[in-house]
Amino acid sequence: MKVLIKDNEVLNDLLGYEGLKIIQEPGRFNFSLDSTLLAHFVTLRKDSKKILDLCTGNAPIPLMLTLRTEGEIVGVEIQPDSADQAKRSVLINGLEDQIKIIKGDLNQLHSHFAPKSFDVVTCNPPYFKVDQKSNLNKNDALTIARHEVMATLDDVVRSAAYFLRPGGRFAMVHRPDRLVEIIETFKKYQLEPKRLRFIYPRVSKEANGFLIEGVFGGKACGLRLLPPLVVYEGETAHYTHEILDIFNMRKNVKKEEIIKKE
Image 1 (cartoon, helix red, strand yellow):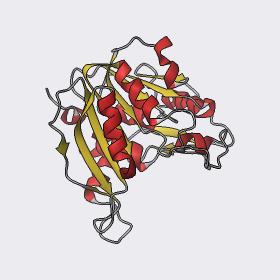
Image 2: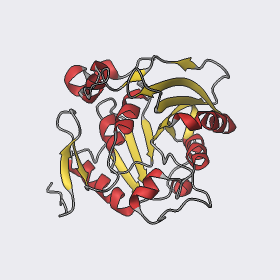
Image 3: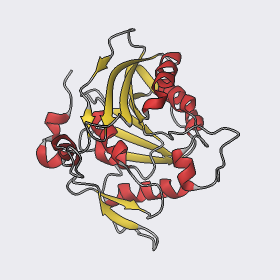
């Protein structure tokens, strides 16, 4: 199927993932290291048949998850241009039978899906709060992607909990300065944190991100603090071996070896 690439767009390889392409627009909010790490971090099991990705953007996480699972994946994006790029990226990769993109508000998803209908939910959400002092263009695409203009942290976690089956998992990437608030919000909606991994730009620097996964209705306690994930070697601009392995998932690891066993 021939897919239109608009004049203001480019068709990029999705990192080192063999055969995967993604439509992007220079100057717009495009997929990031955070999305890549989240797609690699989230727990997928043999019974993970339905996966929901909130704030999907141009769909990097759904695309990357197809290397780990044959389950059904739904991406939700509120911005029309990003949702359109996501849909065309899915088509260009021939993945329309596995990935469905919905242009819509995550707060209105109950009109599309029943509660407790997903096994896994992921989200790379807007990181920054908005208050009366924020001087933002609330219609700007970058602002919407980075700031809580259209969806707050509470909205994201509440939606994840609403759609997860008991025992289902929610994985998210975020910033360390909001860790306490995030754990409190997880618990507010019966998501028990079970895995936490801090992301460091370099060994000598403070963490600038973290990956967290919770289980809906999970037993209290049992949080595992995983080894630090370091992005760059020493003070160089070279990625660590672990980051390079993540970028080249298909080349280095067979799909059946990636899917976690029960």
